[in-house]
Length: 198
Length: 198
DNA sequence: CTCGCGATGTATCGGCGCGATACATCGCGC
DNA sequence: GCGCGATGTATCGCGCCGATACATCGCGAG
Image (tube, rainbow over all chains, first blue to last red; front, side):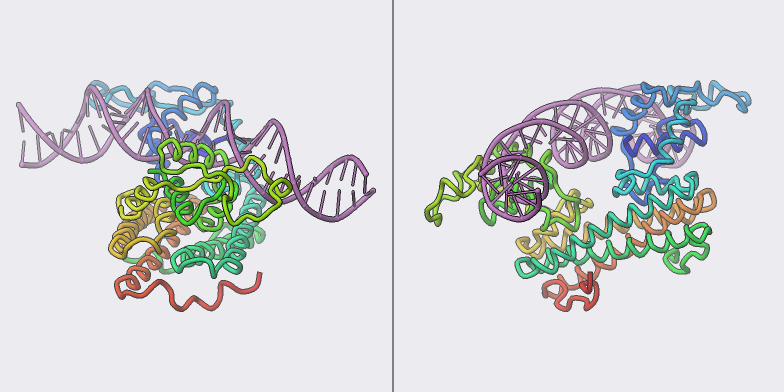
């Protein structure tokens, strides 16, 4: 299952939405891991999801809508909602912890829905991801240790930077895993800086 | 021009190679920025480059090869070499500093060939990249400042981690830019740790 | 000695994701 | 009244990816 389909299912799971709104929600929910999903991805995916029977069209805000339908917007907005099969499928996807959940993008998306993932699965995903990043880190160390002489200063610096990023992510994952094991939610005490002045 | 084509051109620029070898070289050169380019990407790209006249096939290690042709390997290895047009094109690509050179992947690949890029271009790319990452950082700060209440702890933590990565990259870029301006190559003094035990 | 297995090596196929592009309407301010 | 930015839906081509299929070579286990 593609990561985008998973994310859409997840958002639609907490209320109907039309494409444009969906895109914005995706941007804020996944802003940290992917640039922003474009319409060239969104609409075909919605089509696919609909064809698979996981979502359906719902005819524009049905209830809780007082008067004035003719002059506020009212255009070709297509509101999608998740179906029963969609919810079931989403549940299955939430529970899985395979190789794709360790991948860069896959991990990010699954992590974004961790609030609805059971703890055992969270731990398996976190550990799988850690393993993956550690392997990557070892690969970089290998290169840096064995091929450093043959490389120019810039290529070298790139590797160094990549290695540092790996090390940092492993530390982050370790912290999350420890938190997870001890039962408490992530980061009760946010780091004081890093939210400071713009 | 796709980033993969650029990278292949760059590697072939310093000597002929066959596909398999090319893949390994790419893995070490770009190991820090992309997983590893698969054959499903490599071979079609080589085809495209050849069709465009930027590379040609060269018939298996021509000279400096003593006896024993029949028993060492000798199979369908296809060695590619860059053409004159290919070199020219690569030079053009090296000199450009457009929006694609600020993108995640594009930036990484261009950075990997900075040793053959003139300083003015290096600076423009570095600054463009910094701007890009700063924008991304501001976006994340915005989200964190305005939508934090609506988000669960995990989504929040993801944003926080992403923001931190942005801040770190900006600092890194700033350092590189300063170095670049003062004329000396990057990182004369590598950080003592981060290469330690496996 | 032979058999299998991992490394070397080339290649294709389906499909996802992306950027560019095109349109249409709404509400706002100039 | 006119343009312009936000809202909104949609498509097309193509780059890139993972899975898969083959074929050969050298080496070590049995």
